[in-house]
Figure (cartoon, one colour):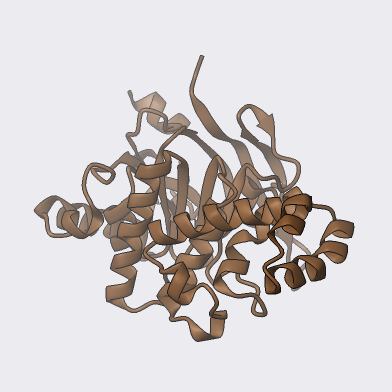
Length: 324
């Protein structure tokens, strides 16, 4: 029995062109399977379909052909299996750091009627320190448990909930907002954490700190992570496995391919060492240069038989199988 938590099978995504009515292919016959606990870095240039794959795993978008499975169940909608940290954060602007962190458990654990009825009651009971009343209200008990968990997770994400928990997103730095968004996702204990270019708006120092943070949370919670980025540097620094998408490839007849394919699927040394330490190694430099040259150079598209699909779980092309 295999231990694959994610399976993407024969997935093609296309849409009709507004210009001529013909279909434009974004992803071309994608096959990918992930073991539980992998930290997959999904890299490629802008517009190659990285976020489309993430959306298909999440269940917010469906392939034109093929299917996606989580724990052998086809993905047909968004569920709590996946926690998403998007590029532009996911924080409620009118909620404080702590309120953002506990939003998921509160929404999942209480009904709309409870929240409407008991939020003002709990507020007043808090104000007058009426602990006996608070203990009788189910909404209050769920909130208090969520607050305790949130404070612990925020601390583990390098934040101070006592000092900054009452601040609103506009009062936080970019790194603090992103840490809060990560804590918000971890609060739901997802099987899979999806990161959609979450560090693109951060400065170099903060981005490196966030790579170390993701590494530390992955180690601590032993969850499966899919990290989408167009920065090869970040992908190689963080991942235990790298998958590269590219629109620049040639079919078996030597003609330019349509849509993006997986052109690299290989193991990485990430996961064994903190990203900020791994980036200092010669191995990191060589890997980064090799991957960048094979996926970004549109003037030298890869023949389909030359795809580097060396990971044990990689799906080799027919041309590669024939060559063996």
